[in-house]
Image 1 (tube, rainbow, N blue to C red):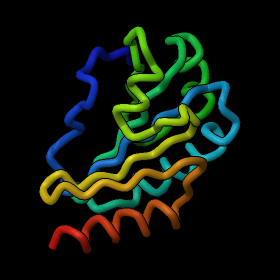
Image 2: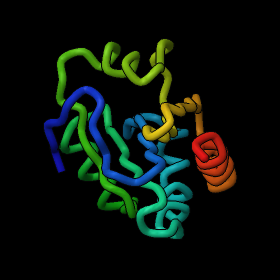
Image 3: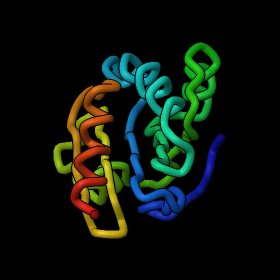
Image 4: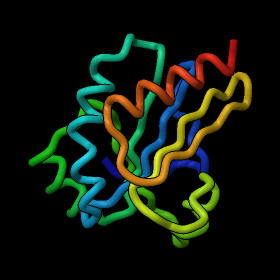
Length: 133
């Protein structure tokens, strides 16, 4: 589960990529994850990639995922400065949850502060696709 990765990981080659920054101690993070997992599982393969990036300990993440499994990969931030890491994604306040929707082909990027759900994810991905036609 613990992965070392660059500051801005290349999630995959799908046209739209989602990175969700979260922690087990964050109530809204825990609340949104089942909906995010259901949404991601329903997406057409290759249309969108998603990763959860946890700012937490390996033990806390492992225990949480045993109780709340998700359909997308979870990475653990292992760097020394989580504040700078969050800023690199546009999260200047340092709030969680924080979601980034990107379409790298055309340089589109949207950030969402706070809890997301199936509807907000669908709208964000549709907007990303429409900006990159």
